[in-house]
Image (cartoon, rainbow, N blue to C red; front, side, top):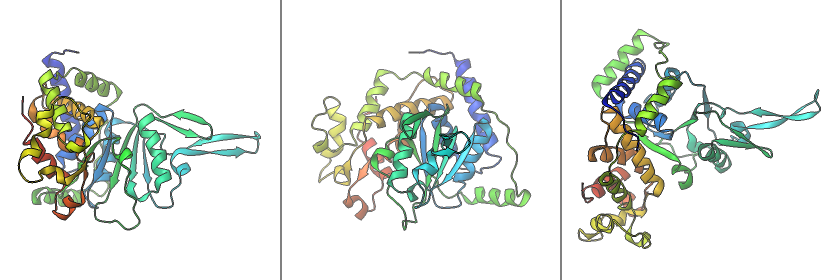
Length: 343
């Protein structure tokens, strides 16, 4: 385990604060979204943003790329999009008498997949390779993507015509799913005043370069996660799995089974499938980021609880009964966490 002193923690927390302050010049409010974007960027994961139109999802992503100085590309997903529109294709060079590769917009550091659920399965599979393998295949050759490589996908929860449900395998590759909510009246007043002052928006300083990003990642690696916290994370994730689905699981059975013993059918009637081990890994990584941004060199149960919602909400498959009773993933996670013993 990497140990670090408080000076490094304070320096990392100061960098995170500078990033928030710079992004606040463009994005009013939305603290949870901004912290989630920074956490995933440092942790090296991808993000799925869900929210109605007009909540600054695209603006936040573009602003994040601007403060990092990284190469940014935006891809508008549509039903007629082809894999080659994303990854690139082979073109015939008449002068050379041979094929050459024309690389697509996915060859960037920060890729915004706007309205990702409007693209068909072939495009989703091409993006899945890029997200998981950090490479794309064009013809018979595979090409590595730039480092760092960061996909931020958006989807609109209220429009379903002409959309395709994201496959579970692709959802599992997103480190976090962030729900972007409406601003408060005070925040909306700030948005109104900002819109009246400038049409183009303020220019942002590149406060998060490759060196500071490397420092943040090093600091995150040094955040202590003791054995009790690790058991708590595993218990929280295994608790999302219905008992009938985890007959092969050994250990942590008390906390995993506890929600089912509360009378009636329990919370598990709302869950078809629970989170995979990727959920445990995501919870571990994001909990470290929560602690680091709070200026601590160790993870607490509150960090794990806060990280559980964005790390697990897209990894739990709800039943039809949950939809009928108006239960969402966050409510299910909240009820499960109430039964998991805190170390």
